[in-house]
Image (cartoon, rainbow, N blue to C red):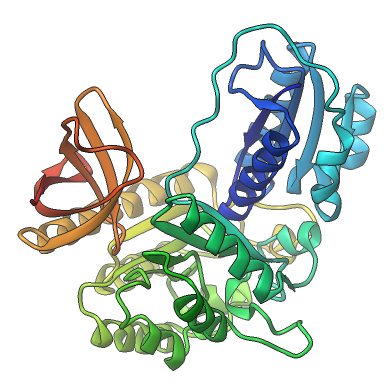
Length: 412
């Protein structure tokens, strides 16, 4: 059969979709990006914000209009089963906990006849090593959709990394909903540090990257391992709120000073590390004074990029019914200003890296341009020639800026 897998949301969703596509191809299906050619459309939905809800609904409607069989999974499906069943009876709803069973719901004895475009595999595969979240942030609905933390066995992860290495991949990205608690639920307990040590010893993969991790879970062991150049010099450390008042209302487990102390310790260990963060603006009861203080705090921290989100109320969360909700236009204005700060920080980080040599994984080559990613998470663009192919690891020098990204020169 011809299958289209559409994905919204986080890296964990992306990892799950990539795994499903691998399984589909392994049993004889063909993956395609064309909805009109698909016999089955799988939508891996998201519900982290109201915008994600809207995008999920739009994608479902579009898929239903194609006439193909539609399977919907992911957090939006998990949280809206009754609504989906009531409004669109012609779909198969698969809860997150049964996502691995999707492969068994698609018969593999029928093949379409239309020409298809095969899915191009990611050049930096995202691996889900953990699911669920043990936090209880007042704004977040995801623990209701994903449940408590559940970890993939270390030996399973090891086998998957060895397989990716054998296929010629140069980097893997370890992802999870609450990555820093990896292994605490296993018997015997394991840790993210121990997993990294295992992968460094037992595999030859060139680069291992961590996705988002809480700053309270960046241990000395992780920082020591990041001295090894096979661990990417990049951390994404969600801040979320820019004042102690907001952090407390969000039920985040640190103060601004505590966050900054750990951040400074990380930078002392590697002053050219790429550090990104998430920041929510317009959280309930965030006054103009609170926002200005937040803007000042974020400006003072050594981030290389920001992911900025206007607060989006999620029914069923503690923050949804908090008093003093911030007006939509105010949230929009604050998000625009914070995003501008993020653009400045990204530009400054690229400038700081000018004349530095970097190894980049080439992710795409088209129209005479190659695009790759450095260890410290700079997107680099360079003129390509016949010797540059997607998937290779090559050495470049950052020569300047190319729009919001970096311009690079290949080194021989």
